[in-house]
Amino acid sequence: NWMSEKGHCSWHGVECHHNGAYTTYDGTNGITILNMTNNRIEGMLPQEFGALKDLRVLDLGQNKLKGTIPSALGKATELVTLYLGSNKLTGTIPSEIGQLSKCTHLYLDENELEGSIPSEVTTLSNMQMIGLHVNALTGEIPDFSAMQELRALYVDSNHLSSTIPSTLGALGSSLLDLRLGSNDITGSLPSELGNLSSLRSLHVEENDLSGSLPLEFAGMDVLNELHAYGNKISGSIPIQIGFLGFFSELKVLYLDGNEITGTIPPSVSNLREIVDIYLHHNKLEGTLPDSLSKLPYLRNLRLNDNNLSGTIPADFDSLTRLEYLYLHNNLLEGTIPDELGALTTLFRLRMYGNSLRGTIPRGICHLRDLYLEELEADCDGIRPGIECTCCTACF
Image 1 (cartoon, rainbow, N blue to C red):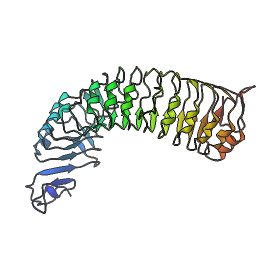
Image 2 (image 1 turned 90 degrees about the horizontal axis):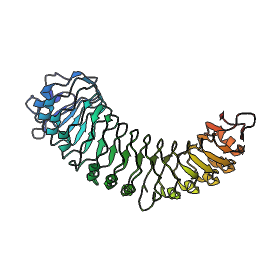
Image 3 (image 1 turned 135 degrees about the vertical axis):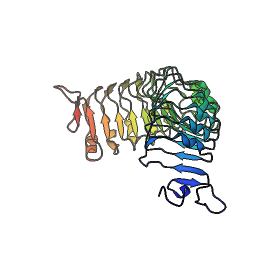
Image 4 (image 1 turned 45 degrees about the vertical axis):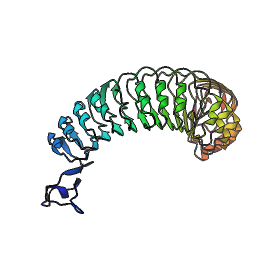
């Protein structure tokens, strides 16, 4: 109903100031909300948006807009929410965005923006959520410590190449979600991140990070998700994990594809909320601790491609929600416990590339009649280590 005779305040996606108990449609009221999300709009953003002095919300996300972000947007100083995500915008982020002192939500994600993140943007002290992910941004991660109200910072999937600034720890109890993954970030994980006492999700995956997990991360006592896979993180898993709030509410632990050494500490049994444990493609050694069997919600246990030795614990039968058990390419020996046949929710079981011997227990074969889609073992060759009549793949 755009271009109707009633005036622009009656158009779809447009809201204006109320005059008393009702809104007039004579075209004299200031536009406060312009919401045209997901409308297949093409073309460029007009400089004239800067003239909308009463504009609080500008939502043009999920369209087909091209060109640059007009610097004149910095003149719309009443803006609280600016959402231009999921378009085809190019160029740099204009420094004039730093004039939007009332802005709390800034979404420029999933575009083709390049250049650095302007320091002027980091001065917006009322900011609560920033989405700059999935662009082609370069340069350093700036100092966001002035944004004491910031709850979520998404700068993942860019080409940022600095270290992680320790000043992020100054965001204290406000920050809930920090996403720095899929960049070119180097250096180690700063211990100051342990000051983020309200952080629930930390993404630093697919970078070039090194060093060990700081013990100060024990301060993240409500962390639900740690995504740190695909780096060069070394050292051992802290033996304090699970104690005194150290990751005690963790549900997702992704440390795969690193250079972590040492053993799996028995204290993992204190991660009572854990659902996914990904430790594959590291340099772990030692035995599989029985304490892994004390994780009531564990669904995904991936320990393949390490140097783990010893036998498969029969106590794993208590993992009644387990769907994925990956133990392949280790140094495991002995026989496969009959008790694994009790894992009725198991979907994939991979045990090849070890020194296991004997026959696949009948109970495990019976799981093929339930949900077990993949069963893989060393059952190939003239003298296979494992005899298996129900495996889906033999090595």
